[in-house]
Length: 255
Ligand SMILES: Nc1ncnc2c1ncn2[C@@H]1O[C@H](COP(=O)(O)OP(=O)(O)OP(=O)(O)O)[C@@H](O)[C@H]1O
Ligand SMILES: [Mg+2]
Image (cartoon, rainbow, N blue to C red; front, side, top):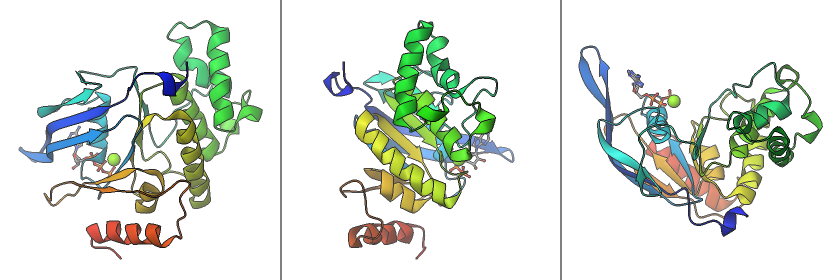
């Protein structure tokens, strides 16, 4: 069954979410009464200055953190912990060094008890999707940073999550690899249609990849969202793109 034929899945509702952390003997609010709806298949980017709560929000969505108030609903069901319908991708891919690319990608299915041959068949599909077929028998130490991150993406997709949560997945890559990976992600999402929530420091990356950009701040200002209604693949040099980038930078007093 293709993804398109499946019923609507991967819808996220954030309702009145608040989270504080202790700082020097007092509770410091990080997220205050945040409400947000993310459509099935939507790509949402989260941007904002260091410490504004991007990772905290992602961890709340992943079920790795519990809210002080409010809730996260996935397909109408409240999140109470981690779940197999969500996959998290971090800045470092955290591959198992003693396993080949193929076995790393199949790992999530192996631990779920899928027969080895079926797990590898599914893994090969996603290795192909991220363009690493020639490297399926390589070990992580033989890969570049960008290739390792692509293995991490294939591993996450192989378990067929409804929702991908990415915390600065391209943040550790050099500038050129990063641009290539942004194009790759656009292509992968066109095929997968998985709901994607992507934390990034890079405002241009947010506009290049997302359907909507959520802007968080550290000064207590209310979060805002900016829709990005540009056709894909996006042209970073188009007047509309440049205009949106200016608007987003303006939110942070940058130009
Ligand atoms: N487990 C924790 N205990 C105490 N404070 C925490 C904890 N997790 C996060 N914080 C605090 O919450 C705030 C937001 O942290 P968070 O990691 O979400 O920021 P961020 O937006 O992801 O920043 P960066 O862009 O630097 O990754 C920070 O001030 C951080 O110190
Ligand atoms: Mg962070």
